[in-house]
Length: 200
Image 1 (cartoon, rainbow, N blue to C red):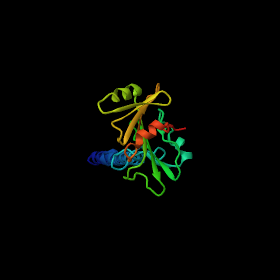
Image 2 (image 1 turned 135 degrees about the vertical axis):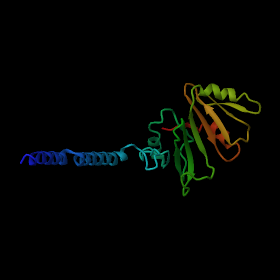
Image 3 (image 1 turned 30 degrees about the vertical axis):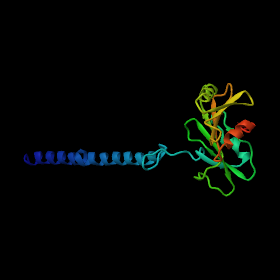
């Protein structure tokens, strides 16, 4: 009988060990791991990035939009500086590009032309630039450049009479405007005509 006592105690200890020993901790560890894995899976879609880790651009703010004249002003929301264009044209759509680097482009695409076409068309670029007018006047002093006055007290320059781009700025406006037309000399002609005005 004395010998059975220790055996019973040993059995009780062994039973206790079975309830609270390593198998119990393994179960707790597996449960914690499962909870962590579930949390990671649920939260992985909320960081604003694709599966390859690159950031996604919200659909509400595309960098290129093809808009009608009535939609043009809305496409400029949030730009933060004046944006210019060459006025309305018949038979075109307006491609608005905003590469998020302080530049905005309005390109005149004929009907049937796809957005982001590689073909050259009339384009008016607006670049955020403090001291834009002083910069235009300085550039206009370079040898071979043409510096002209435009309505509203602005100045414009082109690198020559046949240049495909002309640049202009106005007093008190931190926007430098570039007008591009594939036809030689047409950009400067548009600038001189007073056709380049702020959108809206």
